[in-house]
Image (cartoon, rainbow, N blue to C red; front, side):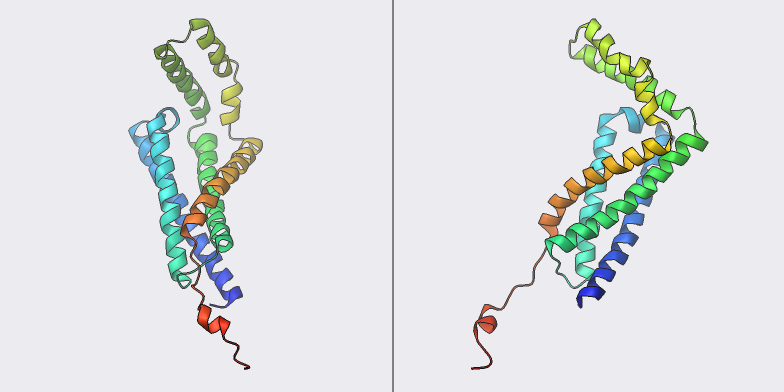
Length: 196
């Protein structure tokens, strides 16, 4: 596949699969919200499950892109394709969160703040932490610092996008290393000089 055509095809497929994974993430969020509106924000197992599903989809669709462009791509091509996919995943999920927190349920940051404080305090108490230290940790929730980070503002969304890109960059470096696939060079053909 010609280099420019290959790059264009990787970009097109990465856009398609990025939007698909973003849509799947939103559907999962809606399902979790129907079961319990705060579950996704307070249950560590649900957060881990969501992360594992997201990474698995990136791997699956990354391999799918590789197949559709001829079965081979370099580490650089894989990383760029995965980052393009991740860009659109983040774009969709952050837009969804903004709409949810700003228009659908504006009290969500307060609910998450209160639920997170309760979960954190209970978890620390079970670990045997002193009540004074638990109260110290709870100050983040009580003084509005945690809630302020959840508010749907341009600054918070930009920060979430930036941190998300860094997170995906680390994941994608690892995934790209595993799913890259180079064409085997024919050493005999390269060793023979056809002009002799």
